[in-house]
Length: 297
Length: 323
Image (cartoon, rainbow over all chains, first blue to last red; front, side, top):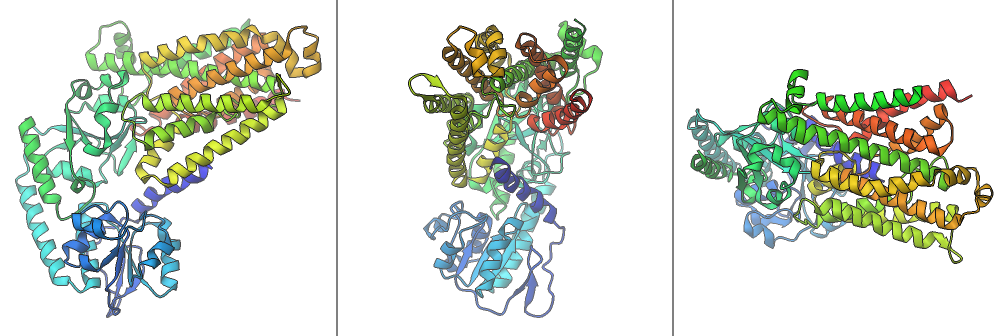
């Protein structure tokens, strides 16, 4: 049984990352149809008034597009914006409960782009309900996801202005990025076994744009299991943890004292769900992290 | 004599390799410098605080699992018996997953919860297996182990199904086993604890010989066979529970190492048990060194590596010695 569950768990991130493509424009096959992030051709002609969103980032984008009132279902992890909490939860976003989704009588169900969702997508499509698969792992995915959702909900103008604003913000942040005395940061996700954040992740992007360097930036993965020794070798100046992980309490064991930054309690805690997924709040998240890093310097 | 020399040399070499290799590249001279106190703080921390306790803990856990496996195989007279068979991995896994999902925020909560889960499983299996007064029936012991293990695994499955994906992944990686939590502290606690059950199992090596042959030959021993069975079962289980709590569930070592020793060495537990201890320790230290370095900075679960190197070695042994 362990093997079965494990294969499900480990295969998902691998397949998701395998699906990552670089295109940022929304490819159009012909008039009135689009291709989503699962490569599925979707029909734009039907009106969309009742949306079930199965990814926290999608829920947030829909509210940002001004169509939050059309969201009739969300996952239990959708906690932004605060108004989203008033929407009925349909449970988990990955391998969701199709019956519960249908109970909300949606005309569009937005999935997170993962192979494990394919059976649910097929079931819902077979009932004549539109689906859309969107990948939202990194900042670069935000533009594409927003355009797709904008096209679907008839809010392309709002989508364009959100994206334009984001691009200006990010360009400005990139330009003003500190160039010297850059702190080397370990982004720690778990203690036993030690799991750290690699280059292919949203937190990595945030940290680098804030003017720090991820000590595992050379590993092209969202996260990786490492040994403490590998962390000692990379000798981080700071250890960044998310507030909800309680990791600062968990790395008080003797073996972690081999890492100077942990022995000296050089922890850096980021608070808020804007650090857990790409959203239009990313620029303000980056600014907050940057000014906190300034203080540390 | 020659065989002991070979095993001893292999064990020493394995521990030396555990000290020398790792994701941080340190030359032989620097490793030696760290051991003799003439290296900088970073190299000293890597060699003395990370690699050395890790290699020693892996050796001790590997040896303990192999001894436990050998004892249980004789006790239940079943070549498929391994340390986790008797519901222990299920119980320990349930404890660990519960601790992770319930977010007990302490660094010791997972090992302690795993130990508690394993002990609970032991008590349950023991209660189920004691039939008609005080007789520990080997067949019922096996069944009880499987049943308790299945129940614990199902509870674990339910908890996992209801938890966030990230936590589930963390819990699974912990169960899969590894020595990332090795420290002098953990090593000392485990060593002090393990000495007693290891000593007890070794002390009863002669009854184990007879039990392996069957219950009737064992009766000729004159000793209280039922009492011995209970003592051996409890010792083996307590040892495995401790191993799980410091390193998760590491398969293969306890199952196959005793068979490998029996193939080349014979069935007498007086030499089988210490030989299994040395070979189990050697295998696990080597596997851990490979797990840490093969794809550095990424690490593999050590249980994956034990099987990957253990199976080919075992196949060669079977082809060569089993006739």
